[in-house]
Image (cartoon, rainbow, N blue to C red; front, side, top):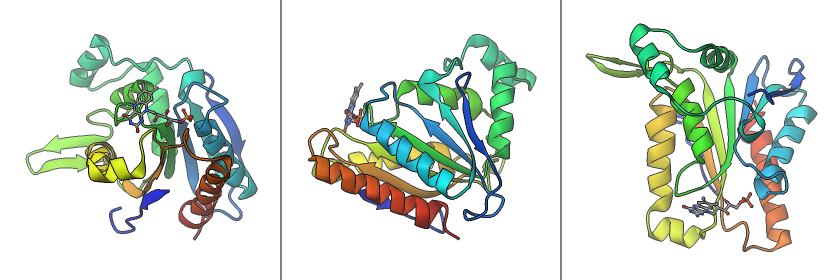
Length: 224
Ligand SMILES: Cc1cc2nc3c(=O)[nH]c(=O)nc-3n(C[C@H](O)[C@H](O)[C@H](O)COP(=O)(O)O)c2cc1C
């Protein structure tokens, strides 16, 4: 698994699994797990299971947004665009933005599709991370309005680590997504972890990857 850790820079199936107060996780930290994969038999689903098990073990306060299981419409429409100019937003967007504001730490799980994110997640962000809510353009430049919040991302790939490094896909993904979206909105990216070639590797290697996810959850996400 390949990672970046940059401490310095770094729906309505909406399932609310746990609303307990943290005891062993970071104190008073609220986590939002955003999951984008349609197949419950996928490796992404195994990652989701690992992540949520750790959060439950840590008695953490978290919610899960399983985008494919949700009825949230991920298509930014003309009314949404007009609302931006009017300084308002549709009810479903406002509800989701409330949740975003109450979140301290986002945990995003999705496969790499076309060297980016599945369109359902891109559409979710199009509508939720809107101008005036997630970022504010001004004469001095753009200000990220989600400052003080953290995000970590787990992303499976079809292509190999070698291909990601040699052809620049890794840097391109991080530039577009970690910088172009997350940091742009003020989020501190605590890690972006690729799990490479998941369909090609052995069961043993996949188990090791899940162990890696578990360790990252303990040390980087829930650790103090
Ligand atoms: C529509 C689509 C686009 C894809 N694009 C890429 C890609 O650009 N780069 C890549 O490495 N893998 C790509 N893949 C492969 C997926 O990343 C891979 O199948 C997935 O990470 C495996 O995890 P899963 O078993 O949980 O689905 C693509 C797969 C699909 C279905």
